Image: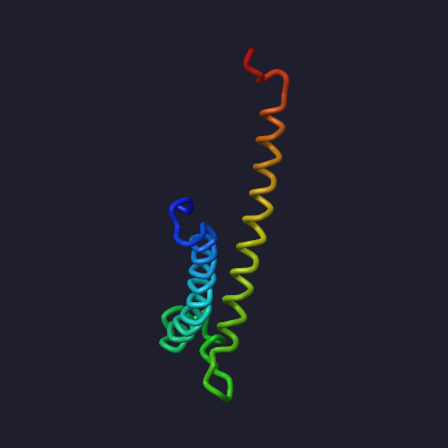
Length: 100
C-alpha cells in the first residue's frame, strides 16, 4: 500500500504511527474514568480505593493503575516475544531440523 502513496511512501507509515499513538492516548483517557465509575458504583468492592478523585476531579489512582497495568502488559509481551524469537531462531538454525 505504501508503494502507491502520494507524494511519498512515508505518508502511510507516519499516518499509521500517529494513528496508533492517538488510539493509545485515547485509551489512557477513557479507561481510568471507566475504572473510577465502576469503583464509585460499588460493582467490584475490591476497586473501592479507585473511586477517589484529585482536587481537579481527575481519576489519579485509576490512571496510575491503568498505566501500571499497560506497562506490565507491554513488558511481559516484549519478554515473551524475545523468547519466542530466540526459540524460533534456534529451531531454524539447528542442524537436526534442516531440510536437505
